Image 1: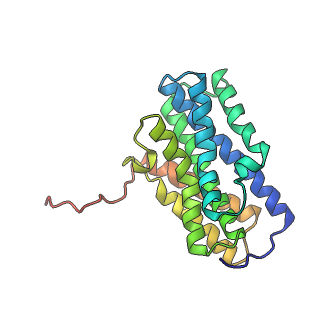
Image 2: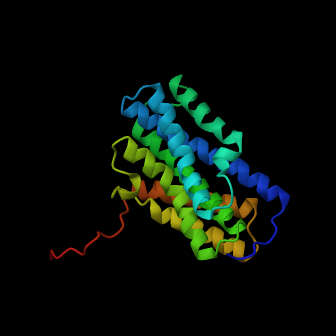
Length: 217
């Protein structure tokens, strides 16, 4: 653990707002997956909370700095409930479920890899470990969502990079924090870069190398 510099008050407020938006985006992805899998409203709400809060809860439990934010602040319960209601009343387009799900998932990934890294750094975690926690914050919620819904997790989907954009966002966030230039503007730029990277990788079907090198000529 390292002693974290005191952050400006506005940065803490910004972190909360971004974190709540990240919860919302991931929660919507959970609800859309529930629709795709033809779950009932209970399943939709469950996936909303699991996808929206899972990554942050795991991060906070690892940091071990008190009660996880999702349980300490009632505001975190609002985005999943709103997401479930919006999807139930079809106020979020469901015409192309898979595409819409991936867009919301990418938005949640972009926000969470940044806010997760910043949360870890502000708790005094070493930069390298903070990067790993930032990646975990970004991918764990989606991983839990997909496993519970009996889907191949997006992190293992070979038709687009998932953990790599999160690693990029977490790494840049840690670097900006170390250089003392982490603010709302730089955070927003990193998030947009991660979001774009993820969607472009899906569009162009970028893939990470296989687990074992191919022996075919």
